[in-house]
Structure formats: C-alpha cells, structure tokens
Image (tube, rainbow, N blue to C red; front, side, top):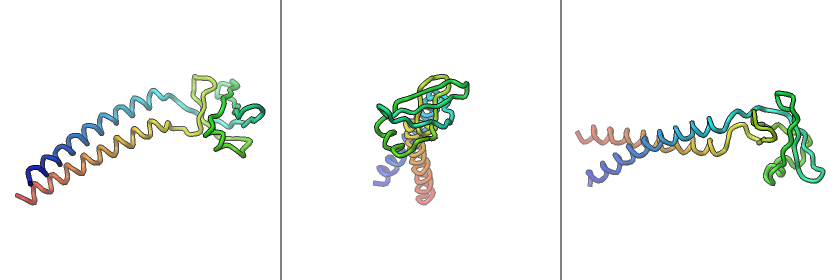
Length: 130
C-alpha cells in the first residue's frame, strides 16, 4: 500500500511540475502574441448600436462595436476606460490583460503548485519512514 501511495505522489510531482512549466511557457507565448494594449478614454455611442469611439496615441480616431457583454457592462455610462491594441485599428477591450492568458497562467500556477506540494509530501514521507 505504501508503494502505491509513493507512486501516486511521484506521478503528481512529475506531472504537476512538468505540466506547470509547459503551460507557463504557453502562457508566455500567448502573452507575447496578445500584443500591447494601451489605455484610453472612450465615448460610448448608442445611436443605432452600442459603439465606442476613442483617439489612439498616434492621434487616429478609432471605433469598435460592443459585444452584448460589454454593452451590459457599460449600460449607463457615457464615457468608459478601455484598452486598445497598439498597431491594430478599431480593436478594444475593457481589461488590459487577456482573460485567456490569465486562465492559462492560473492553470499553470495551480499545476506547478500541485507538483511542488506533492514533491514536499514525498520528501516528508521518505524521511518519516526512514
């Protein structure tokens, strides 16, 4: 029974640390691919459809239609703080960081943490039996 427990803990150690490092690298690549998002103050226009308009750092005028979720979040606002993609006109979102990148990074941290806890548990059991 002790050998089976040791094997399971060892598997959690290697898989947790390995998958955590691998997903951490995936999160890093996704963060780099996401690009640079700069803050801006936008005007919320609701004539025909919910749209936001803003000036970028280069002085260009941009506009983007809001998704239904974004429209609900900005429901009663005339002005909004947004983030726009540098180098890509008319791209905006309400958060600076990407939710997908954040999810991958949290999963990587959780798996890596599981691997570290399993490694520590493995050492504790090794010295407790010795």
